[in-house]
Length: 331
Image (cartoon, rainbow, N blue to C red; front, side):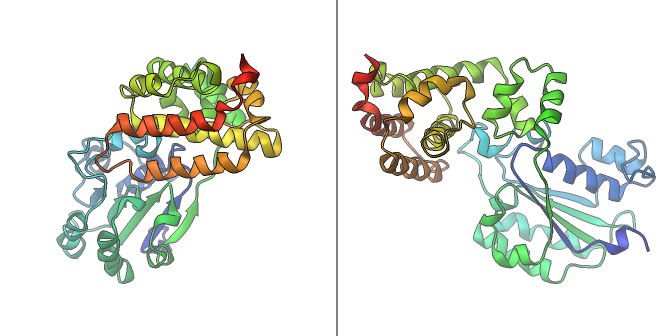
């Protein structure tokens, strides 16, 4: 029996963002539609089907993404939740209209008399109406149809959607392997970038740009120096930076402060461990967790119309209150 004959109607490829899940799913779709796949199962890259994939136009393949999402960026490790610039003029979600547009695609005869494949990325970007619309097709997929759902946060999917998919967990690569790959890509500070990304190498590659590291360093320098911390000035500087980036940096900073306080370990900012260890000795953990909730609330509202300057002022004032009583220790 062929591999295609044993495939389920839907696969759910789940794992941390920035480890290459989209690339894997896209390559799988290409391999399944390839007319002369290699013995390894990889696509040949030369047949008519593979040529269609190269120009992004295979008639038996559909890619569903938010309008604001760039698949090309994901192929190089850039993901929406890791600070990709959000264009608020286009949708950040996969809509019910996009799902309904699949009706003709899944019910008509395939162009090559083979499979038809729908890749949904990221699956958690479906709003509830889109997820329910997709569920109807997942319950009884037409013969020869495969859905591949890629998810960075599978817990956000409807349980009924998850239950109709065969789940594949995509693990993080080993640290040594990831560092070797990053250095091969010319990343000078591979260790630091890998830590910042949560050990996801494709995400680490994106974070290695000079502009990103410079802006990140300016914010973290202020967070680590309470005696020089000026919320209003920092909010003015931060207004020129992607809000998603700053929220991510602050969440990682708070995580590491809590981690030092409870386990004596730094995960995301090893280069700032000296400053963080001094802060963590005196910061109140309960207040730190409250500030963490404030950051989460701001992150949930990220794709809604916001006055970034006011958001940053509030967050930086809250942080200042958290660490202000330690100022004497830094004079």
